[in-house]
Image 1 (cartoon, one colour):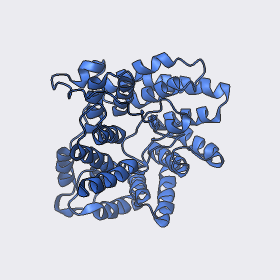
Image 2: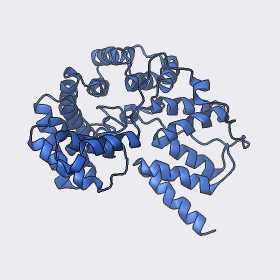
Image 3: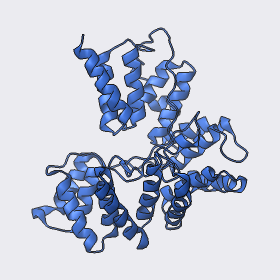
Amino acid sequence: MIRAHRREHIRHIGLLNVMSQTKQVNLPTTRILTAVACLLSVGCGVAQPVLQSAEHSPTPPSRVSWHDIVGKCPRTLHASPSCAEMQARTQKECYLDQKTVGCAESMAEYLENDCEVGRGPGRAMDLLQWACEHDSFTSCDRLANLLYNAGDRNSRDRAWELASRACDHGLADGCETLAAILGHRGHGLPVPADLDRAMDYAKRACDLGGKHGCKGYALCLVQRNHADDKALARRVLEALCNNGFQPGCVTLGSLEATNQLDSPNPGRAESLWRSACACGERDGCYNVADLLHERAEYPRALVLYEHACDQGQSESCRQLGELHATGKIVPRDLSRAEGYYERGCRNKDRPSCKALRVVKEARQSR
């Protein structure tokens, strides 16, 4: 999805993975920015660790929490609203089916966070179209995300038009969405012909105060692969991280780990990921889990994979599915593997969906 949860991982692979999730252009439906390699959100996909053969380790004791592993966040955390809270707000804004901008945007937020909507996305899209026509540019951008996620050519062309309108009227999210779309065309990285355009939209979003735009701009600079650009990219990401923008910290760590910045410091990556994880950034948790896995610290790795999966980090769900499907580290259990793959698939992870079909066929053939 272009919009939704922005991921960050990239560890032992190049910048291509680093950009695997930016503003999620659904690319699943939570905000059109998904892996815009160069863009917005970072999607940095960390390379999947190779499963290691080992004796089955017991499931980690429930008393060991993810905070016991990564520590506490030094900043005050603000919890995201639950589906129940968003539903209550939507019911209030949409009282008696009134047509208002507030109703349109609250319903869109509900959809973007994968909450169930009684009348489905059609009602939300109708309301967003109405609100966009009445100069609610946030509604234009949200409608662009929903349309892009629909997947057909006409919807995506319309999504570009709507996001362009939002960007042209000074909405950072609209410019981020345009950058994310360009990145999505290249499967996470803008194709060379689109790099300058993606960088321009990301820079515009950054100048308008969009943090994901700043992150995307930094990633575009790295992709351009000039020494001066890499130094500027570091300054941008350091500023984002120092100001508490955890996706920026994860991206900075990923680029450090893969030696893609000036004066790289690979040893710093883990501390950046741990801090981001402690402050609620699920992709940081996934990256730390991978490190623990590689070090054969399996019980602790499982705790963090489980936590990240619970937070909607699809690669963690997929990894747990692989571990249970193959019997590496944990006892082989196709039923549990199916459950994890299903969770990853619900989060729009295509490899999870493919693995889910394979596991279901295997169970049915037994």
